[in-house]
Length: 420
Image (cartoon, rainbow, N blue to C red; front, top):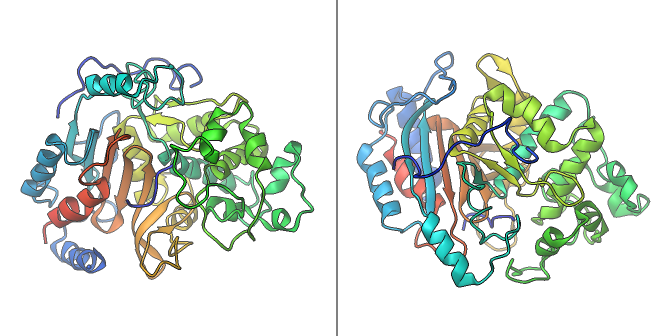
């Protein structure tokens, strides 16, 4: 499932997953500008050549030592304790390559209580109320990422382009899906590029405005109930000229995963394990497999909070990991740039931008000030390059509205904590 645009201690009784990773299938602009100038003048940001790289574990430090106001971070944690942010499972904050805040909460009893209340006890990977699958995968620390999956997938896709398996983002998208019967002579399909898919400007019809996942006719709900995901997505009409309008579409992300498999011969989870996860130290993950045998690239990935932060750190460091090039700097820049500067340009207000399956909520001069992965239920990976800062929030708030959001936490607690 997708996510709409910006809207302590170890977990008891949990253990790390065993095996080789994939288990069964294994005014803010002004404030930012002021803080950036202050950070540069104070020298609190990490400088080139001073990067810290996690080994098996992240190095740790204190907020004070990394130039953060500890009281502001403590106030955020207190608000999470009080439930103001909904059901947060894990909050992780990294600055200058060091973990400076790492808090988790065990809501397992609450999730089981909600399951009973919803009266939906079917143990299925797309029953989002069932605690065997959500928010953690079984008795592990692997947390559902939902649509943050799309952002991670984008990194793996970029590696395939870097390697020459796909000629580039201007390549036509639909010919990779020819086996599923799209009309390649249809002008709108013929015109669609891979970049149009990556930026959610495919032209495909998906949800109607205002339609939610509570509606059983929502295309994402129908997709997840289908036995043939690729065929379902391919069958959707292309009602808009590609490249002209942002239209958030889970099916397009499914098709991007299939394009990678057609181009490389590897399913997305296997490709990512070899070319992305392994090289940056991610050993354990779970990735849902669809009934037609593909990796669920719209929302099926599970990682620990610490390993999700590795993906953010790779992007923060321009695609390099401890002296090794993982994905090109050009791909990182393009992915996290506001290719779409405003996803809803006609509503009279400034909205988030969007890159290659990455949200760009704050940008200036065509460059991201903050880029993010967002996922259903409260999954957020925020990367703030100017401050060498990464925040991860994992939660599972489905049936109630939280008083505050993780985006609010970044704006009102974390960024102001950067010492001037």
